[in-house]
View 1 (tube, rainbow, N blue to C red):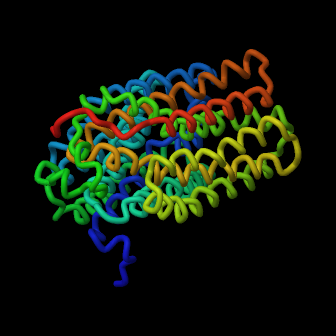
View 2 (tube, one colour):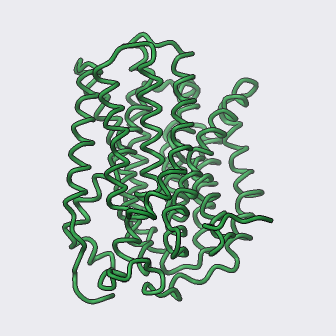
Length: 408
């Protein structure tokens, strides 16, 4: 079997990381969005109630991830993988069998924690921890699991819904996780070194950053630069989640047809996948911090297109640009933390970033919903998000190399 050069350092773990992020799709918003109308109709829920349940579950999962995320530094890769798949499977089954809408809360919580939270966290942490060379390319490959899931899971669920109820895809998801994905993930990671045995010095790829290769989570949280970079790492998922969650409302306001939006999402997925091929090499060439800001340029333009244009091609262009930024941020946003702080405590460090991302994606749909209910036009929403993106890019460029004392 021919293995690409950038994967040869550890091909099995490269595939593991990709598969882990793809598996997170069962707990991502794009998968949940397929079932919204069916679940609301079954339990007679209003849109606001359904959105509140989802947001509360997402926020709670972010808090729990801060506690569970550091286990990736202390547990073997196999052990943490079993935990994540078990939590995600439990969430799928709870949603599938729930007789009352109140049980949607623990179901959503477990699925969000296991999927968007732990599976995504494990995949990106593995890519950052076990690869010293070509880290940007490995991060791009790992982040490719997200658009793969975007392309497969909603479409598959939609086809199943055409002949069955909304509960069936959740049963199937649980079966796939237990019978296919868990054995495959355990096989790929069975020879992975225990995280505690890895040296931060050996994993770091910048010789001039010796003072930063073993930062603890506490040291990171005392680094002002972390708070300057974090908005840039969060702004793309923050923006995209809000835009996708309220896409139907935008379409109604602008008069876009269902066919237009369907075609536009094809461009979104294509932009996401294609940009990953450019984002990884860019990170390896100029570093993650600079790449992070450059990766925000497409979504800045996207929000201006949304806010300032009203043509038949507007949804196609602005969603394609959103997808391009997702790809670049997938590579740069994953590489920035091991590049800046080393890998010895990457699980604990990434758990803060991942929890912050989950928290932000829970709030952004609420923000846009409030703006829409207040009568704010899509022009104002697009310009507002463009300003937030620009501010995040500027902040990231001002962060200096951290110097917080001795190695942990």
